[in-house]
Image (tube, rainbow, N blue to C red; front, side, top):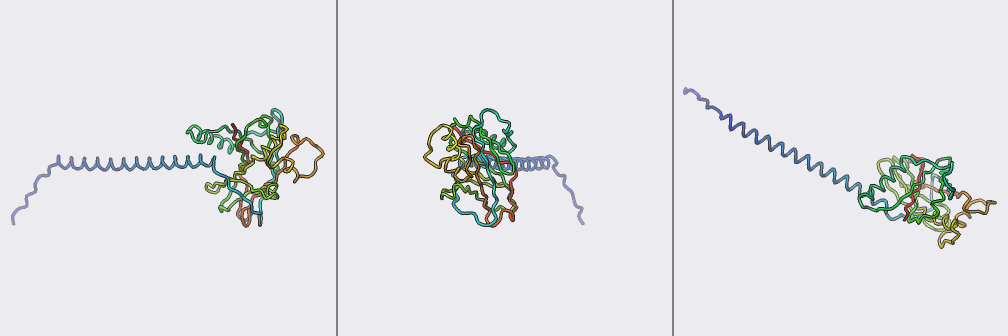
Length: 258
């Protein structure tokens, strides 16, 4: 049997091949990480644009009469108190977060507008204090913001009875993130009516007299000095209680103005 001769392996060539393969694998991993980072940044940018677009989204309209188990939420507006009142409320975390979002969108040159927030207070009902300075603002949009726990993603539609009784739709917007649903209700007609009364002008739309006609008679004839009580109703389909829908934080009002 002829002896088997083992040839020497060129270790230099082997090292170069191994080094070249390692470099290719490293480049592929680096390229993959770069692509993943780009997709992540693109997703963040798109999500940010969607959140900014919500600021000017068209209103939905609800004209349906609530059925089943609804969630009443009485609203009380204390109009145009002079100066800083002992009843003023420090802005909560959710209001701060919303105002930051507005200004961040403005920095990105998306829907840049002046904004003022009014923090509400939960005292059985929801109470808001409007300072005197608001009466002179040119308000372009006024929104009530409600943040609700909604683990079953029930459809939540707000209704203002003072409008529903006159066959006027309640205008609102809705967005959901995880188990939280944010409801925005158009309150510009209320701010406009209060401003008209404070300025001594007549409103062509729904007047404060018509809004107050739902309340019990009051001996005080000064409409600007009286609290305005509104009954907001949340319709969750079959049952708000069954769907475990409840408010997370004290609501707030946002005023966009020129």
